[in-house]
Image (tube, rainbow over all chains, first blue to last red; front, side, top):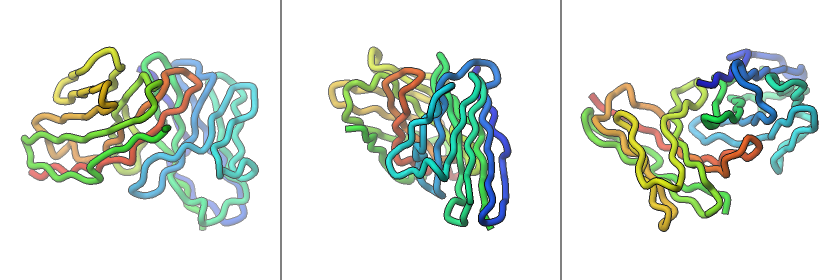
Length: 113
Length: 113
């Protein structure tokens, strides 16, 4: 089946720095990828839809300047959390659609100290 | 109209019992209804999915029942095992590479030995 690889799985960064999270579709091409944020014991909250070769579409309330999304190829989308603050600490998950449905990455636990 | 309502919020079942989780939706344009299983610190993994042209789909111990007229669907886990203890999310979408998945609020299942 389809595989979505997400890296890193865990990252700790200092407040004010930026962190990049990568999401790769390993065995299929994904023109669209999705980025979610999940708080403890909560559901997945869609942050943005990443479109290959064009600007991402952000959900209402998500700061596009803080959460930069780049989808430069059919197999790679990146999420950069800029000027991270402790309130950005969360579990970030990417997803992509292929013929078998939506496949999710294993997630990235971001801790901002 | 984009919401997917899920219940119960949490569920405790004895080993060997049946776990039942229910979801309801409003948007009749939805045509793809997956269930995901998520373990702590991991991304969601697709368990089973159904489309509205069938009323039931079974894969191993997992069964989806779908009631199109009532706009409801449910997950049944037969012979529940302690290893099934996880958070389960229902979801819905208009299946397409560019359409987002709408998640339910999640059900925390605990299977007691």
